[in-house]
Image (cartoon, rainbow, N blue to C red):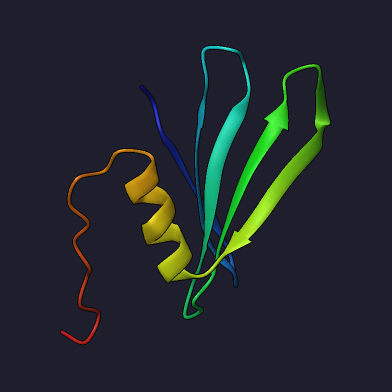
Amino acid sequence: MNVEHTPLPGIGVRHSFITAQGRRVGVVEYRGLDRRDVFYEDADDPDSTCGLRLTRSEAVTLAGLLGLLDVVAVDDRN
């Protein structure tokens, strides 16, 4: 699966991929904020996007629900 990483100047990075159904799904990771936006686009209407805002803790919980066995926290202090 090809994951695109798109820099968003002044915001962060958008990570996304296209599903088998033709929908773009991804996460906007905000630089310096405890926030991630999960989004997906409708394959029939590329101008239509639905999203959900999550804190880091909520994102980790969602990752667990999706079957991720281990989540490794990155230490940004180094």
